[in-house]
Amino acid sequence: MPPTLISVDPKKKPWEQETPLHNRWHPAIPPVASVKEGQVFRVECVDWTGGQIHNNDSSDDVKNVDLSQVHYLSGPIAVEGAEVGDLLKVEFLNLGTLDGDEWGFTGSFAKENGGGFLTDHFPCASKACWDLEGIYCSSRHIPGVRFAGLIHPGLIGTAPSMELLKMWNDREAKLVSEEGTPEEKTLCGCLHTRPLACLPEPTGAMLGKLGHFKSNLDNADWLEVAKEAARTVPGRENGGNCDIKNLSRGSTVYFPVFVDGANLSMGDMHFSQGDGEVSFCGAIEMSGFLDLKCSLIKGGMKLLPAVGPSPLSVNPIFEIGPLEPRYSEWLVFEGISVDEQGNQHYLDATIAYKRAVLNCIKYLSQFGYTEEQVYLLLSCCPCEGRISGIVDVPNAVATLAIPLSIFDQDVRPPSTLEGLASGVKVRRNVCMSSEGGAMPKDPRLDE
Image (cartoon, rainbow, N blue to C red):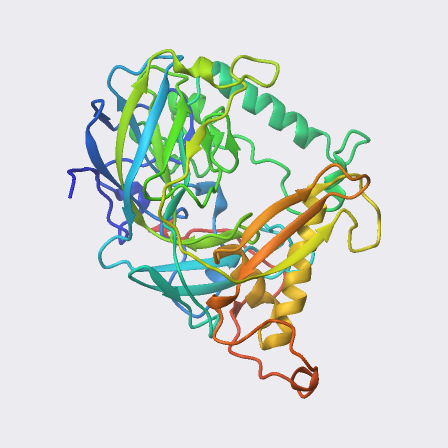
């Protein structure tokens, strides 16, 4: 086992960890550790909420989760010799669960507190807890399903420069300001996740060595950073929260370096995830570790195509590792650019994927599962999403493929409908909260 560079204790609060964590992006957040090129090291991570969700049979913790705190990240880690304009090569050698914390959760947020891809169809918070046993997982809340995981960090990236940070904040603030005006983007009327972007917010911020908001809201120097530090919610030019399920053992990522030292951070560990992570709180979220090795390609950032108004308009590239679960039989659902009200959209792949997901949920609910169970399952099982067509006007075509062997029954269309007509016994449901009344709060902040 390589030496542990950053260790965590999942039983402790995020702000009580021995090595400070952070949940914002800002170049002023100092590194908590450093590594040399070629050094192999281990990084441990808490789950993305910092322990707000519990292994029980109530989803009220998801309903009332304090999203101002997420995501809690381990780092920044400075790579010795890294300079602006370099390419940071990060090799994923091993990933796993933390000893004594082998469980995970999948959830959907309440409409008024986070929402999700299908929040207009599933407005209530829900949760499923998973037992993680070696490479396999199963859930008491979604019986009859078992599959192998593909552990990966949902979030990993380098620190932004001040110039890049300003780009992020300016464009996201513009998007939010357009809501309710003629400039509002078309999809805002079809997708109901709000807010449209999570803008900088000092409340909830943890800035690593600079400190936690609980004791710094009257600190002018801390506030200066917190008021412009970017939230970690979306993926951006530095990588970040891209939720790419294939970044597992044997993978390599090439990150642009925007600040000297690169300042690499990571977290949001997933045991398994479906393409799109559609329920938002939607992989099998867990604490975990990564064994990594970093090296530098000097001046290599110029290899990344700058597609946009700035030379900083680049994105990382990655190599998929050779290890992943193997499935030979799939059931595939199709969606097109026509919304649930029958309105035609123009080559809209998001609407098409939403339709594919809904088609799958409605179909599988005929086999003894509730729609809420299928919604959470599609967010965390090894399903494959694809854009199958993007040129045949007016419809984009998206597909969602479900591996058949994860079920303990045959979910293919039966040769006769007699079995379905006589009714299928509904299994135990996921944890469900009542609609409305979410009160985001982390009670640990009052301790």
